[in-house]
Image 1 (cartoon, rainbow, N blue to C red):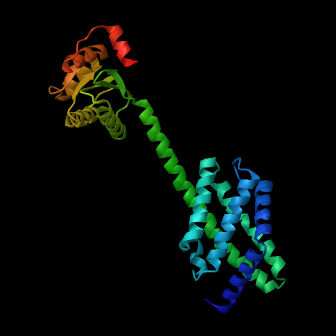
Image 2 (image 1 turned 180 degrees about the horizontal axis):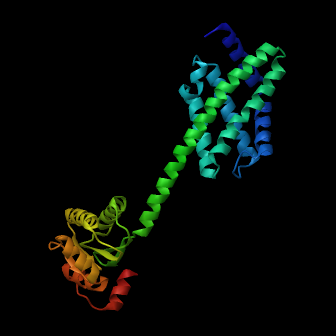
Image 3 (image 1 turned 30 degrees about the vertical axis):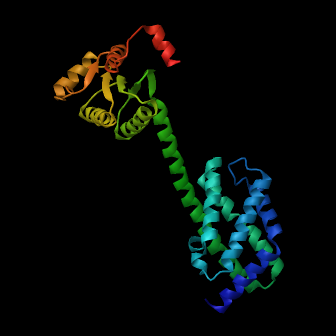
Length: 294
């Protein structure tokens, strides 16, 4: 590291340590004035966030980490920028808003440097160094935002699929999964996980997979059903597939799909009757069934 860069780092450290409160106040004000938030974060939350980032910048500049790797290699600074970005993601800000919020720290920091020195050469070198640091921080915040947003989307998608495939307790030791829409690999995995966990939790002996709401059954869907049935059997439970309508029965027969090893029924009611028999329980009427469900 050259002497001049060392001097400029020391100059920035002096500004950060001597004017931490002023920098935090200025940065907070800039974000509020520029509306570079896209969220409803309060002024106190912004100021607390500002102080955390300023402390991390100070620690990074005081270390031996080269300037070009300060943001990416200094653990505390990288973590602070990443957490700032993730908070903005959860609060609903756009990636542009998040990057602008980080970049607006430049003005606040350079204003503090101007109170520390009037030397134009030092001010220019400090501006270059600040730009290098905060441009990298802005890029990291954008990258973190995109990754965080993708994670949120995937989690929400999984939650929606879980909600769309509930496991229902129909009778003592009898569970049912009503399927609606398309059955693909991802959804099959969620159905399987939910059903197997429910079998364990309820000590179920029979699981009914109702495909009344499945529009079409092709080879892929049949394979998904077979995988689920096999997993249920490995848990020691029997499986009944209901909702086999005439068009689906014809399709399965035409495709040559062998479901002969699986108990099938046309309706959910028929499947429930068969399931109760498999559990060796007396079917004593709808009133008892409703009482058992409650």
